[in-house]
Length: 114
Length: 114
DNA sequence: AACACTATTGACAAAAATAGAATAGCATGA
DNA sequence: TCATGCTATTCTATTTTTGTCAATAGTGTT
Image (cartoon, rainbow over all chains, first blue to last red; front, side, top):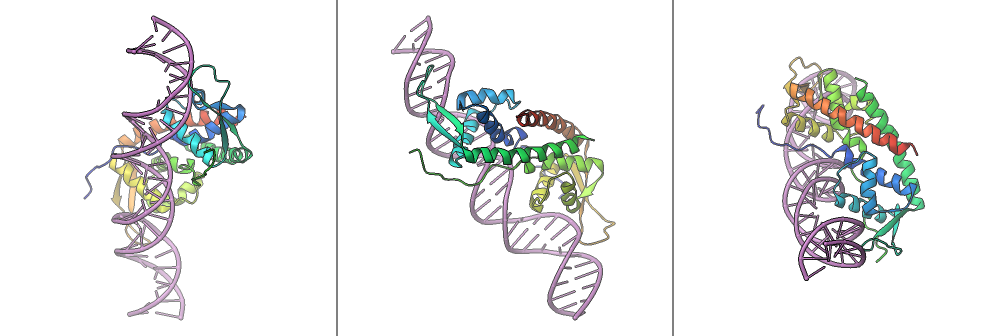
């Protein structure tokens, strides 16, 4: 049955796999809200992510108690927004993530060295 | 409803997201069969992957015609095994992947530079 | 009031990932 | 020869994740 090609799509793009550590990194730098994180991710090279992906990841991380959010009261330009900041657990999670990032970096380096 | 923590698991580990380019890279170096790829992935830092992950990815890539397999006839030590090698399409796919890897590398670098 | 922009949430279908069982050839020793 | 263990691959059920779209909603502008 040598033939019979079925699928077209590829696996989870690297981009998506990096959203979580990227958000942690950004929030650790300074508390932010989701909408601005959406833009900040682009500065990390993670472009054109669907907003839902970002908000969902934020909620998941909050469920894990890596981050904590509160409604931003000194809200100037629009509807209420959540301001996220890192918890102590999130700090630890970031450290763990950084180790994983280093490993991934090594793997990639190895692959690229033709 | 500030509280009510639901989930425990994290997203797809980076490790898994790197299986596809890693396999392409290895096969491009020299044709191999699945079982040995399982071991070779470890040399790329992708450790303790479930065999299913590797075999599934191989089948997916074969469906995409990135790789081609044939049963290895000069089979010495066990049951029949598939020998995989890269197609021309796979060559191109590897190049595309390498660009993605470079981008990911940049993103990671950016995250790690505290 | 209609519209555009900021901001977040919810829900659903489709795809992917996890893990374990099933299958099977070969080699070795009891 | 029968059990055991290793090599090697496939299948399938279940759980998770992802992609996408719609819904909600406040604020400012025309």
